[in-house]
Image 1: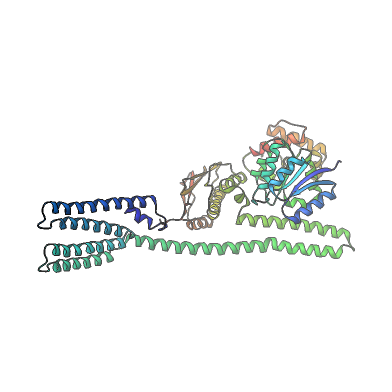
Image 2: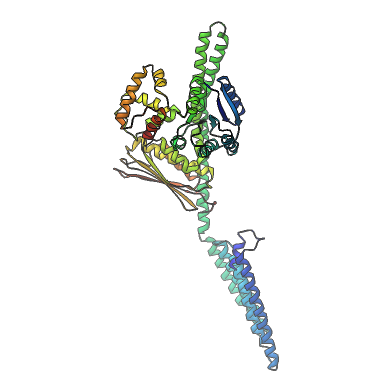
Length: 215
Length: 357
């Protein structure tokens, strides 16, 4: 695998250094590490990294500058892969990130960094144009009564939750300890029951599922 | 004169436009009066002298000027009892010199004003006695207001103390307990690292999951104090984010004022959140709505649901807490929930600069 170039935006030094160490240990190249929103937009546009890892809350305002900067950079560079990290997750922000339908979006709780293997996999998935949505966002999507999901079997709902997080069939199979073929059967059934167009493309698939869940 | 009265409530050093206009009117009137006074004196001289009648014209002009001045002085007093007493004093201050002047101008002699002054003084005494015993509306308003403020201040302090106690309890039972367990796991892992690498790995896994749970606890407590999205996106944005998380489709329309004080914003957010939580829990509704309206002085949030209605305003600690918090800002919560529904809750919060109501 080629060395992925990362721009990192995190204002807390402790966390920034930790993430830089983590990325370097996993053979990423951190081309810039910034601590504020305006600098982030400039660096993203100038350096065009393979993926940006961005804290939602950044100076100068300490509100959602990171998110706004990521969205601004993606307007100039459509599809620029961005993984947003946050101490809390909001469906509202997930929708804003996914709104352009171009993929290459990650939105995870900072806690997920602790599961290094999964976190690195998520960064790589986003860099490849995929989606990595935090399980707690997906849980809220599945929890709401907006959409009829009663037709799905418990197993299918589990598969749907993983799918909505942006995982591939292989990853879902590994985490549910079933065969990839079984996952394929479940996904086909889910798509039929929900009346969605099946797609081989992981990314298009997750966007269809999210569009359905968001209503 | 009204300009002068208004100016006294603002910065007295900076004349307002009406004050400047009033001053120029006074100057013009004074010049006209002076011209009239001089003209009658000249007319008297031209007509050949004799009885000096212009003194009566001067007397009229001076009396009018004094009356105008006293009227302005009276109006500078705050409305109510103090202005009424000032009016009485002004009348007395005008009538006594007028009587004495009339006596002097008409040639003196027997000092008859003694009787009229005595009569007026007795009348004034009676007037003062009546006015000071009349219940004053302004005073009643202020008394009621002070009682309301004392009550809401007490309530908000009680509420704050209870809230801090809850936060302390949540932190103690949640994040703090997990941190203790985390430190324990790490300590044990340190002991075992050479002897039993496998057990160490298990302990570290445990430690990691405990750390994540502690973060979850902290997140919940922090959200209950001040949701981050409220700081990020303001009241309307935070309510939109809240609506997305509910297990009930809720539409949000309208907007909140841009410069809403943080405390008002927070109170309005938690009030709306409580109403929606009740709708989700008890109303069996299939849809809800939040509508935000504001007119520069009052923010009005209407929360509706199409559920079974019959919500009891007295029941539930939640709504009472919300009411108490809103009262601190002179806000209120009105509940209309007939059996069979729909439920309409109106939250009203004044947000303009503080004023007496």
